[in-house]
Length: 293
Image (cartoon, rainbow, N blue to C red):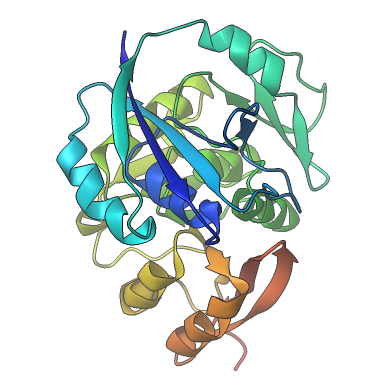
């Protein structure tokens, strides 16, 4: 089937910010390139494109509304033109296998592209080509996966707020969580999450829903949220009520110079600190107040 391809250019600002916004808008793939050079799929930990101006390309389902994309993305591209054109389908499986290899996060967790050999031991999450399913190579995703691996999730419930296509929620179940609540405002993200959970044989341990569908009295043992800092600040009061006292917290999607704002916004009910930094991205970790105080 054909795909809608978006292309725009960013200057000195960091392309990773636009990348997260594209993924939140339903992009099934995002990559960076310099004019005339080979594309670089999501930079690995500590890596960023060295170019002074970066072309950002994203792939969307063919029926995606371009006017909505333009409206949401224009503030992030500093006046650059956003171009669209249709591209035909190709052998995504071959491209996928040529690009990705199994990756380990922490001591137990493995992310393995579909069709490749998985380790004999450990918590395995299978990736499918051609879908909006993060590989874990982006610094924000990698830090969340490593943090989840460090947690004791046996008999725990995990809230993945802003689940995208479900990688973190599915990883939590693979690591022993009895239930993961995957929440997103984008219906395409929820569809992708269900599909990816079914592929990983864990759909019965995931609740997938819009934020307004979470039960008012429901509380979770662990929170992981890989979303932009402005959204985290706005969501703080809502998320507070969804967590048990003492619940461990990990927040990504936050640039180093934005961390103080998020920490301050959540300070009335959570103790947060910078737990890790890769390139300009930080992972904020801590816990909700109320346990052993």
